[in-house]
Image (tube, rainbow, N blue to C red; front, side, top):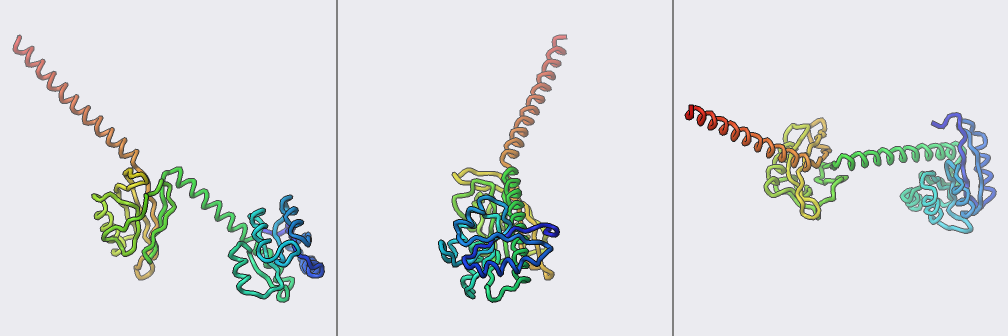
Amino acid sequence: QMTGRCISVLTIEDNSGDARLVQEALKGTSDPAYRVQWVDRLSGALAHLADGGIDVVLLDLGLPDSQGLAALSLIRALAPAVPVVVLSGADDEQLAAQAVREGAQDYLVKTHADYKLLARSLRYAIQRMQADEARRESEERLRLAVTAANESIWEYDPVNRLRWNSAYDGPSGCATVPGSPPELCVWHIHPEDREKVSRNFAEALEGPHLSWSAEYRLERAGGEWSHVHDRAIIARDSSGKVTRVVGAMLDVTDLKRAEEALQGANQRLHQLSRDLLRAQDYERRRIAREL
């Protein structure tokens, strides 16, 4: 939301005439208002960015102390949260595409940019950067939550690719599971569980199911076997074709060990109760014989 605020623009431009045109173009814009600072060297721009308070950078790629996209790389390294719009005299589509790949929010050609386009580009650049930052923060919160829960999130798409964000140590490699969809690459599953898990997963995809779950043993890095509870949501299109499967794999090894320990304790308790009942019965019989 930018209504009612003043956007601080740092123009990096060695041509004073072009810099004045930018200032004039943004001067008449009131919602939001723009405060334009101008420097004609990359070194001066880096000093301004280090001081903070810059909302967006308008960058010319031809500077006395920097040429091409090197300036963009330095600005992105120093101030990664500040959006950069390239304003160049070169009408070069390949250069524009490369600039965007390397972090520029937009690429404008000086001869084609009027004040409305320029103001809109700066405004959208800030909004996109804010949206990207919010997305990264959300992904980081999810990653921390997944790590704290000792859980892995995985995604399977229709072209038989498996991607995951693992909270585990990870297996030593990737294994193809017999019977699974072609090219489906999964973590190492215990040989005794592999066929059943693979068959159940394939059947879930082939049928009308919207969910899938399984418990099995998984090989982690170092050869250790972990017990996991795996469950997934299956997304389908209107014809029933699978479009995506998103799952969450939870390590339940400690829970399994606790359950086994509890079962062992219960068995010992039952055995102790039986032994006590037998001892009591034997003692009653002995007393009866004596009487």
